[in-house]
Amino acid sequence: MCLCIEKIMNNPALPSNKAAAIRWNLVVSYDIDQALRQFLVSQGGGRKVDLSRFVEEAVKARILELAAAQAQQQNAGLSAEAVDQAIDEALNWTRQG
Image (cartoon, rainbow, N blue to C red):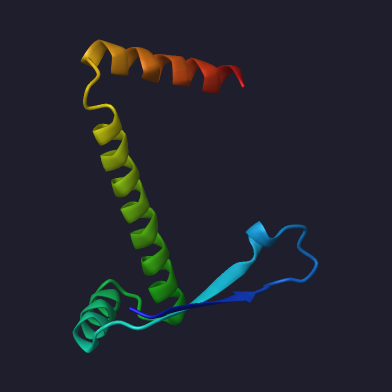
């Protein structure tokens, strides 16, 4: 897969690059391209924005999946009670902050 990233500013007046869109030029197989486009059309979409939204959601889901797998691996040696305690501490910290 080839991945080239080009910054695209939607609005130069925005205070932060976090609000800007980033353009990705991706190379995928013909079969994947056709399957995805057919899927998007079957869901009532098919516009460029639908493709971008689908890719963004897929990337977010994959990042979450990998982060969860990494957390499970890092916590494999801990007891269930220790994991529950760490979760409770993190939730309390988040609620206070």
